[in-house]
Image (cartoon, rainbow, N blue to C red; front, side):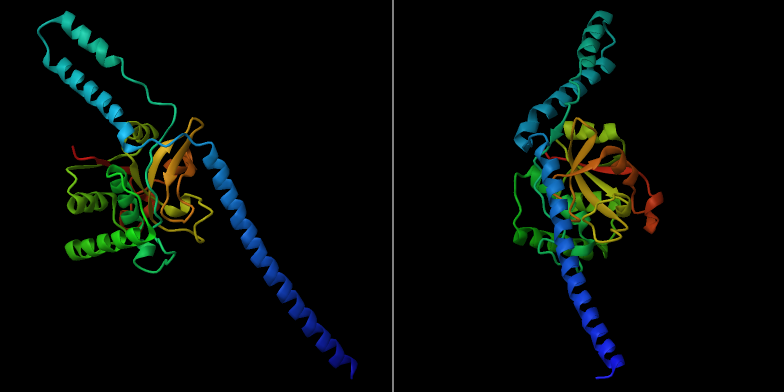
Length: 286
């Protein structure tokens, strides 16, 4: 066999060997990377505060209600300085925010069966709204129930509004009210304190976000242009606890508070990075 042919064959064998090795190594590496991400998630979750069920938040709502009533009394009572000072004293003794809280919001990814084709790839708004609704109604998800509920929400919006993709905060609040008949769904300016105040009274918070600013390593590169997720708690050390429907690893996913605040932006016609910083808060019907 001529030397050139022999060298050529040897090169082909070497190339095939490298392809097999690198392919196998890449597969192993991806598996190891996935395991590392899962381990990081499990480690972070181990230190999270105990989850608070909807029934356990009732006393928090009662505290806020009493404070609001006291404030109303102050405004209405002009008859006596002494009585006004008594009421004022009671009103200023507000219960401070808990050091940490973690509401027991059930989780579903927006693609319950890991099928990221439409409508699931665009269903973060629906999945986020569903998680809040299920929390208020003490329900849990199966893959089948989540899949059915997401499709029903998509169908409802398509028929009623003519679209379901890339819903703004106001549009998301609208379909929550129209579909489930919630009487009060608020879109508020976003701040760390505003989010904590709502969580402390037993209300999960839905946030619109520039998905690529979230820096979630579980997202498919480069991440969603626009995203929605649920904030369900906060920790003592400056983290927000979320249910992020954009990944199967989204239950109790922890974001740094400043990083999450930086990513909060409304749709803004597709110019998401310049969208308003707002949050969506659903008040449970009495």
